[in-house]
Amino acid sequence: AKEAGKNNSQFFSYDMSRSVRRRVEIRTHLRNAIRHDELSVVYQPRMVMEGNELAGAEALLRWNSAELGPVGPQEFIPVAEEAGLIVPIGEWVLREACAQAVRWRLASRRDVSVAVNISARQFRDTDIVKTVMDVLAETGLPSRLLELELTESVLMCDTARAVDTLQRLNAIGVRVALDDFGTGYSSLSYLKRFPLDCLKVDRSFVADITGEAHDEAIVRTIVALAHGLGMRVVAEGVETEEQLAMLRRLHCDEVQGYLLGRPAPPEHLLARLQDENAA
Ligand code: C2E
Ligand code: CA
Ligand code: CA
Ligand code: CA
Image (cartoon, rainbow, N blue to C red; front, top):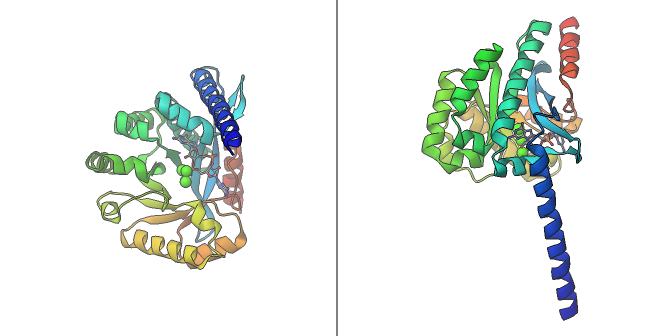
């Protein structure tokens, strides 16, 4: 047993150094990713439940590194966050997404909103309201067509400051959604203090909604809570018709997931908008 323990710890430290090395590599190459034009944004449609119409899309970052190949956001975003690189990268995504939403709007002659993920570092360490105002002015996107997605942990860190920032965003007409709702440790008493427009039900609850009775109860409760506080509810990670039917019965306002469309380059969304217009 002693021998096995020793081997385990050697294996562990080998694994550790490998993952540390990987993070260093990611940080090194990510630094030049914007300049080298290696980043792109894909868009996942968000559908209105009633009428099955496109409400807009969520902007999701992709990185195809010349040295490392494609690296997923689950892997490189935490590194970017730690290194502070998420600030310039996040601003780049915001600008890209807003410019894209303007193009969709011009080409389809209807309003399409765009949702952009904002990291903790961007929300806490920068003047996000000023950045947003600058980008809206530069791109010409009406503020009501932009939604920012924040996670619970971002808001819970310094709640007084978070309330202030959310109020300023609200004042300029930008909407805010609480992402991955139900997975964090949000205190319900804070929820009413935050001027939020939307709760996004985490996909872990959606995944078992047709099987586990408890998950149905959880989603039902989240919907009641959100509607009671005047917020819309978006369910993410919808993969099956059964899940969609259940979410409709539970009065979810919007849905997003592979069933409704995978994240795709902006031309795909434009084609869908034009199909909807023609129909
Ligand atoms: P998220 O904000 O919760 O985004 C939803 C994730 O779920 C996306 O993964 C999306 O591709 C995936 N997804 C959508 N529908 C389905 C479905 O039906 N089934 C399953 N299994 N997955 C689905 P992605 O694109 O890999 O992004 C992962 C995470 O990386 C995001 O989670 C977000 O936290 C972060 N992220 C992505 N882009 C950005 C960005 O521009 N800025 C920041 N700060 N974070 C980002
Ligand atoms: Ca999100
Ligand atoms: Ca989410
Ligand atoms: Ca997430």
